[in-house]
Length: 434
Image 1: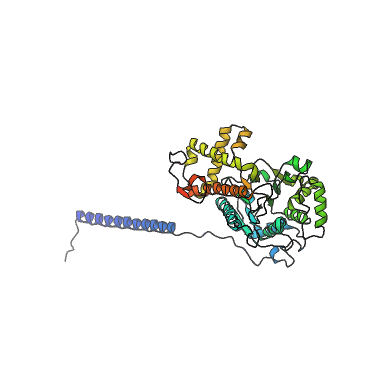
Image 2: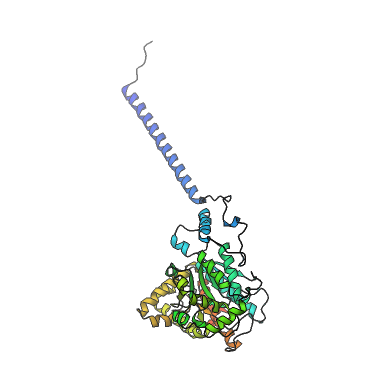
């Protein structure tokens, strides 16, 4: 039988169809592969990828494993702290930042009050508000806060209770570069401001004070021991040891009271107190300590309430007036940006005063308003004041500070005081309703 031959046209047509089929298979295959890749990418973007945690070997000994380590003041001298702390930080890199600046600004704020209820009927409520003010400030600025109500040394009471507490805080928080002590009766009245820590890079102790009043006059009010920053270093631990040697837990306590009473101008109590002792250390240790201590008076790290309350009221009015002129300052923001808003306010203020330092100080809100002599918990206020004047000033300062917090939540106080608030209108305070 003779085989049938395919025509050239038919062969060409079949070849064309086969080529088309192959092309379609390739097209759909590539499309499916691309779709799969896109879907995989999309799914991975929805699923959080855990951040790798640097490995830490808890079996490696640190200073915490030393059985002779003591958190107490009378537990022996702690040596080589800088190396021990540095070793701990290297083993726990998640507790430190890759940024040198951020590490230098790690702050633990420490405060506290007596373990028993206040004798003053309004004292416990006032302490709660003072505590809330500190907690608000730390939340806004990202600081840790340790508020203590226990005596860490049975004989170191009153003003001396802070020293064993600060020492224990240094050991419990090796990640903190600075320990910031703030008395129970101190209020942050400029919630957007933060200390310029870069100014203190060469120093280990920052105390509010005036050099001439400290080193020349030896004046008791030349500095204040109620608000200060101390660096978490061997120098800081040694300084606390020296300071504590004048305290009530030592046999020399009465002798120190007589010594300080004879050399410190303006000292009114017979006992050795923390502020007189601090002044003595700075004056007679100036050659050894002077370059490590910074006496800060450029801003109110400690603002004596009787001197700054009038300025507090006026500065608040001037800030509102500046906000009416500066639309960016009126913009609504999340609370976490309160710090950035404060920095913007300072830049606007510097621009408006054009280098006039007196005007700058006049218009600046006091950073800290300290109610020394009022004793809100104990009730034994200084005879220089009436309790009514102390109470009114404390409530006003706390209200003004709290208004800065509430503003980020869309509220403010009616008539500027008390516990009643109102929703703030848009564009406050420039709006007619504001």
